[in-house]
Length: 390
Image (cartoon, rainbow, N blue to C red):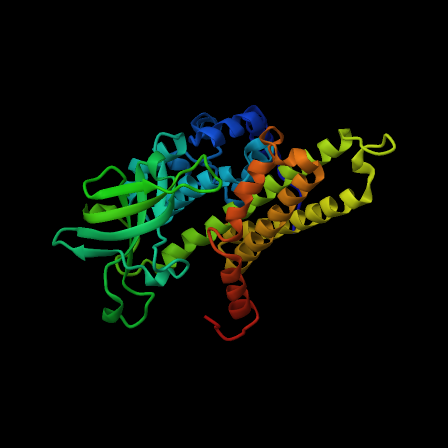
């Protein structure tokens, strides 16, 4: 297995580092406080070609792969953004890009991918519901056939990025559970306009990741046209899993980058802070060891994530690796942000030190986009061959 980066990958990572540094810690603190989308940075990412790194060349992308996307996200998040930036990659190159490039019609690719890659069109995905949570097979949002199209009714919750999106990937049932042999049947993906009659949304006040809104979404007899189908009518379950597994890779890359940023803040602070004997507190093993442990765990998560991305790019199964990387990455990030704040002592509580934002944002990834408990269920069942326990 080759671990060295190619010249092209090195140049891409350097570009990502440069953009990450250009829109650094103060930029993200400002947007976090104002709860505004980091539009200038996202446009710079798109202008540099990083949004479309894994998308088709004929529509403006670079036709590389998930390895390159993971490398770019790591560098961008480490520059000052933290893990929240990875969520924007989930929304656009994943929910929009993967769904359309792999399962969309040629017309949809032609009409939407150039705008996505260029930053003019934003995306979101409506999956989670109040009564189904992590159990996507139990979604009750229903699209009833309307002759030439469908009428969509239902409710979604914790949908990220709705106010800043123009398009929404909607997961709905087109056949009721009692009408199919298996629960995995009867599901369909639609790509609809956010601004559409009958579709409304309401933001949720929350702890962190403030640069991206989270919303309740309501569908009241929303019209869906035939050309808005993504993939197979009544057979979208495997296509949804492909979107979700690539989401895991993006999440893990963001956790690694954000964890590196937290450790950098802690190490820099510890090198300057002097309390006893005139020596910097960074010389104390009581501070060094926890930070070194976090570094080791982040590096392990990174390697597993790059393995998952490589397997994806080779067309091989990668679900176990992607889920494992997300599990360890989120845990390592949570430790890193906690230890960064502890290293700073009381100053870790101050917004001017930035660690508290990373700490708030990191908490999300312990249970989203999939909880660590559900990943452990997956590992126990699929990797260890144990009986399903839920």
